[in-house]
Length: 457
Image (cartoon, rainbow, N blue to C red; front, top):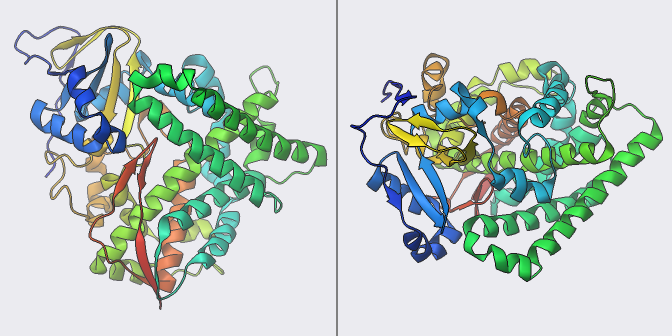
């Protein structure tokens, strides 16, 4: 059931507004172990108890506002996005591991580099990458074993990483280097999560040398990318891949990105590009395996597609139900399950005045499962994203974020995922022995293990 969104954002305070509930630092500390393991149940309990917006004390003088309010989230991300920057969680904590690029920067620096990176992901440019995508996906899917249950998550992780790597570099001699980069990325993410969920131990992370060690890992990852980029520059070859597009990108004065900036942007494309795709594919395949009627309908659609003889972009247009299956999976398991922002100026929202530098955590996981907006909110119904219904959800469905900072690679990811799902369902019947997948919310929303049996059709 869809409820209309009515604006409660104003510049004046409302004396009739209910006081904003504050969760104490003591309560956070008391729940520290379960928050470190998985904070989502703790979030849900507080939302159900305190309403769609509440405040959390995470330190002696540190507060964060949590919200699942659709109108507030849309206001912050779209309507008044100029008053909000990414918080230090990304612009400092994450940036020290993956560099300063379009994911981790703010202001004019972000706008400049977003304009430079954006053309590489234009649909016309992506059309030339679909063949590379298809070739990599076919190769990686050879890891699928028939008639035995296996954890699909690591296979999807390797697939998504190799798709990004080949789309960026079009090189055949980088697989082992990319695997090393993948290990570095995952190791540093584990460290970042500890910093985010245990802010009271930040002094120890510095004193023990843990942060210094992981920053050194990041430097190793940057060296790998520097080597690959140097090989391309020295060869003077033009591959028309994503790296070529970034090498040709120019600032307004005609100069190219520095080598360090290029490395930062490429590292961010890897980090953001492979992980969220692997997560979504894994969740989607589990849901398809669990819902036989969905799988039957999907098979009828993908069975008509011949990727070998058809124009690949035209093939994408013939997979509307495949896309709906992915969109519904991203509703239930949004890759960016929370989005952070910090306010630049004071603002009154829903009758409450929030000071300059207020940190916001917007829960897309909660919003996408909110019973005010979704009928049978916890159920998997891809049909809700058919052409007739889809436009109704624009106010409270943000799988790739929203506003000017919406994910730059959303079309790239969607094409890759549609191809993967189509090829798997066309060739295999999927089943699973589990009713639920345990989730592991790190920087993105990950599954712990996704056991699926593939039976050759």
